[in-house]
Length: 105
Image 1: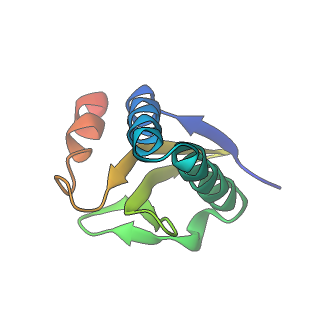
Image 2: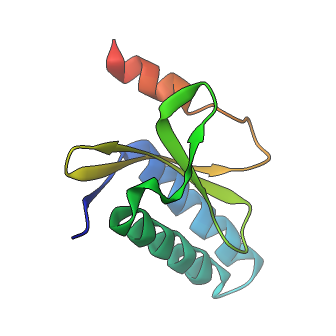
């Protein structure tokens, strides 16, 4: 049984921005990126412990995407997987930690 997928608004915005960026580079590439992200999210929902824990924040895990330099950052919360970030691997590592700290206060 798969867990329910929850995507934080900030992560959804990151996905939309990345899809648009790739689509501007080559028509269809944005759709390919979206497909890889969607498949990654489905994998995580089916097998949530598939990815490594984030160093220093072990509640959060990161799935490295195939073909694109992005990771899906997520937390398993009961019967759902909450996707916190669709993060580029070379830009501001760990920036998303600020958004989770803000939610926890």
